[in-house]
Structures are given as C-alpha cells and as structure tokens.
Length: 383
Image: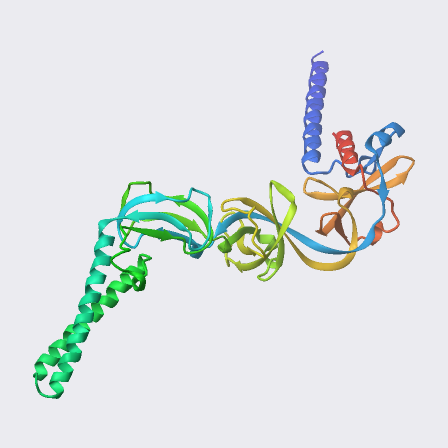
C-alpha cells in the first residue's frame, strides 16, 4: 500500500512538471514567434463563405519603377530675421491702433498714431533753425564782401563762417530726426505743424502681437507690435536616424497639413541640422516654393520625400502583412488553402512595396485583398 502511494505520488509530480513544462514551452513559442514554424501552422483553409466575406483577391509579383518614400513630420516656424518688433522713434501717448491680432497689413500702412507735444517742439526747432541759418548765410556773404575791401577783420569773417556752419549742422540733424518720425522737413511750414506721428509697417505681413492700448504712454524702447513677414516661413521637419542619409539639401518635397491631406504644396530643403537629438532624429529645414496662406506659425505638418528611384520587384502594399516585427505574404495553394511566406521588404511608396530576393515568388499567386484577414485567422488558429 505504501509503495502504491509512492507510485501514485511520483506519477502526480511527473504529470504536474510535464504540464508546467508544456505550458512554459507553449508560452515560449508564442513570444518567440515560433507558432507558425510547422507546415500546418502556417497555412489556413477557408470555406467558400469565408472567401466571399473577406472579398479575397490574388495578384502576382511584378516589376515596377519605385522610389523610396520618406515620410517626415514637423511644425511651421518663422525665421527670426522675419519676426520684427516695432516701436516708436520717440515717446508719446497712443492716440489710435489701426490693426488687430492676426490681421494682414501692407508695407507702409499706418499701424498706430502717437501724440506728444515734443513733436511740435521738434518741428518748431527746425523752422527756427532754418530761419536762423538763412540769416547767418546773408551775414556770411556780407562779411565776405566787407573783408575783401578790408572793411571788416578776418576774425569777424571767421565768426560768421562758424555761426553758419553750426546752424547748418543743427538743421541737418533736426531734418534727420523729422525724417525718422515720418515728417518731411522739406514740406514743413508754420501752417502744417502737427502733434501726431504715424507708426508705419516696414513690410507686408501679419500682426502676431499687440503690446499696447489706446491712451498708453510709451517710451522709445517700448515694443508696440510684433510683426511676421510670411516670406520667412520655414518648415522644421524631423528626420529619423535611418532616413538621414536619404534626405539632402536641395531636395524637392511635398508638404501638407493634417486638416487637408489631399492638398499638397511643394517645398525645398534648404538646411540640415548636423546632429541627432535625444529623440533619435535630426532636423531638416525647408522653404515653400510659393506662399501658402494655409500654413501658419506653429501648425503641425507632414512631408514626403521621394528618393532612390529603381526598377525592382514588388507587390501591392495590402499584400504585405507584418507580425512581431516580421513581414509576410500569403500564397494561394488552390482549393481555398493559403500559406504564409516570410519576405524581406525594401522601399515602398503609396501603392507598392519592394520585395527583396523575390525570384521564388515569380510563379506564385499571392493574396492581395484579404491578406490581413488571413493573418488574423492564422494567428487565432495558432493560439
């Protein structure tokens, strides 16, 4: 009886160990992708009803001129040289603001009006100096005539010349100050002195920020507006490490935003940042070939770069399925039976994928539509 119990116990332990070992081995085959290793485990049999439900079709491996399509993503930015901070040359109170955030403006358009008594004083100083200069000119000419006949001393002539030169320099300085605040000194008279000056747009573009309000007193160092010149629009695109060698300066690319994937704009890569960042990507900088108002600063965008054109063997993209980082196609064996075959893929475009060393597939019927459904059926069968 004792020996019998020992035998039964030993058998139980052996069965338990066998069960655990089998379970571990089964789990191991799942995670190591060995579930399709046997011939019967990489084939699937469909019923006529299943074929109709999947809508399964077949194709053949075919020669095709293909280009590698590198897909990039990034954001729209503006070159720092095309972002301008606008201020007033002289301080004063904001009388009016003629734009709003985001509005478009043209070069020379009045953005704001600034008012201050010092503008009156500057114009007055100019007109007074101008009158004094005319008087000094007449006195200098008179002193030259008198000095010629020795009716006046050389010292008197020199004083007249110094007075004229000083006033002339002062007038030129005042004239330049008036020019900087937008007042034409040549047309200035006592009848058109004004207390307000205009702040003009230096180029055509968009208002990014307005940093003042009506009635506010501003100093010459205060920024009134931040303006964006759209001609400086740049596209900053991430290029992952395995694509860096394929993306070059001067390449033409197609760019589109997520809201309108069908409308693609052409651009050209103008710069490559020569380092890989922590995320495993470098930065390519591109510029649009022509202005596009749909692209605005901060917008997320996508881009496509076509490279490495070559004549090769390929299959439609839907024929190739991926499972556990490996790629497969399904061969039609006839009689509604399909076999999964591992393949090595190369470049791909919008419709086709290159199959490397594909000669062994030339005479085979390959599933096109329905390949993914076959993968799911086979996966469920293996599990």
